[in-house]
Length: 216
Image (cartoon, rainbow, N blue to C red; front, side, top):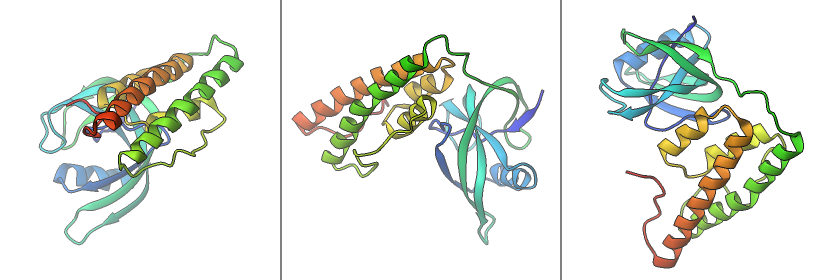
């Protein structure tokens, strides 16, 4: 079973998502050193309990492989890294943190789609309106981000990941989306989550409340 160095984070990394990192802990500096000397790949699982710094955290068993695109080491040994989410993985066994987390993994793929491709295209199309409305509301609330005029990719799978990256999902909902292995189900889940976000943002606009859409 292949092993993968792990960099657990407090937010979900999705495929097609850019990942900027400021790496200062000695154990993760060692991870970057070794990853750069190899295939430049490491895994990013979500921390479900604990903190990014110091260890002792609990992690999900489904995450995303990050490919380092650019890395710059500072004079004091810290790293500035830019990675890109690529494929998903399922942890089959966690190994001891020595010095950084590492696990045996296998690829996590979508199950073959049982529906018609036109169904997936329609599900992709249903995301466009709600996502644009959410982005417009965020802009109205003073949040800088993706313009509401964005165009989703024609490929339903890619469009789904784009939506997941852009939408202000809380980490637990984001993890549910990441772990789904049914594309049609994932697109439907995103549609429902966008509906909830749209309702919350509409309430905030009406009441002048806080802009956060995440759960504490």
